[in-house]
Image (cartoon, rainbow, N blue to C red; front, side):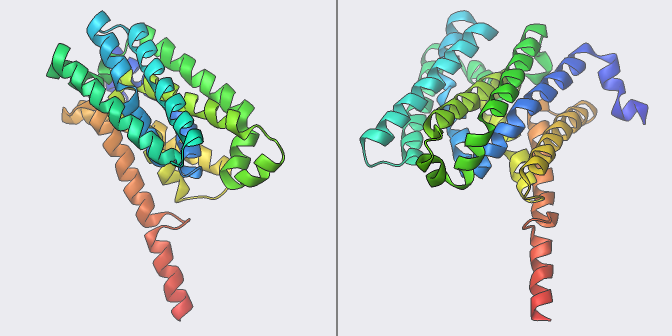
Length: 288
């Protein structure tokens, strides 16, 4: 049992680094993903994961595998898309989801064009899918810092975010600063995606953000319980995915996200809050 569950982490430093990195990512991504689900903004996370691509790609081509440069580039690109989408939403009749969709497609196209013209397919694969087994001490500090900032910021923004998730008109009538809380929350989304692409890539990072949150939504209604379940699913996915990738000789990033996906499918079938099995049992009870 020891060889199966712990020996890879005890024997290899890169496995321990990967595990700590996944745990730090889970602490930041799980609560952010849960608020995205509650605010019906699930696809915004996916859009922002593409939106940071041009900044990260330019930094990668200019400075190589520099954590600082790629993080700053991705953050600037993400904030630019947030500001542009917000400006269009307020200045035109387009809704926020349409604005985000338009700008993330533009951003993704620019990123792929940059990598194709001045980089290589290897560069693109690295940015899109990351290298969780190559996380070093500097990357770990960055991931831990982003997780800490996220938890502190969410604690400060907790009340307006919760009220706006369920009754935005009430918060607006009370002058609760919902717009500023919304903008700050989107910055947190970008910050966690920028941290995540170092380990899992831009495409995989959004998986660790959204799948645990969607799974939790199928098990509980209370917000505190939802957060605990989402965090537990993210942590288990990181740990189990790394073990599976080690023992089965599989890519680590996809193994982590597929583990989270399997938990989501199990929740979809068995979840007590709207799972398929419970809905069928409730229907049989009403017919009886």
